[in-house]
Length: 145
Image 1 (cartoon, helix red, strand yellow):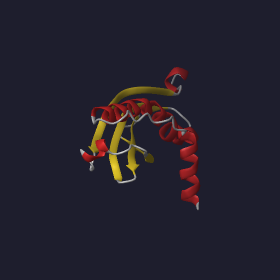
Image 2 (spheres, helix red, strand yellow; image 1 turned 180 degrees about the vertical axis):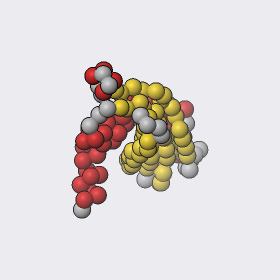
Image 3 (tube, helix red, strand yellow; image 1 turned 30 degrees about the horizontal axis):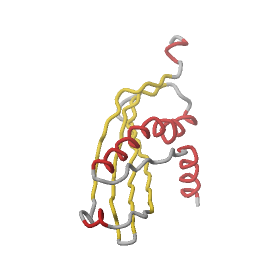
Image 4 (cartoon, rainbow, N blue to C red; image 1 turned 120 degrees about the horizontal axis):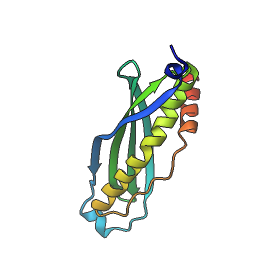
């Protein structure tokens, strides 16, 4: 095989919205209440191999916004992507799948959540950037404990 055929290869084949859920259990009363809110954010990254050199990576974020009276709204978004990945050392694959790919997916997910909250009558929920390297390291440490 040629050197070019053995060179590492990474390509985005497709990014798409896989799942979406939005609830506002206190509506319409919530719009008459003070909106002093707190955010609970849950993040989950999953991946699976779907071909010899294709990987499916999904990033699921559940954002629960609470006010004193209860849950103002809950948004759950799963952004996914199909990635062509070949000829990377096994040691690099976990970083690609748990950090690099979710980092590529996050801006799309972030925009979806901001748009959903705005369309539901709330201020846009602008999620802060996430450090997927750090999240992956924390998950690995928890798994070893």
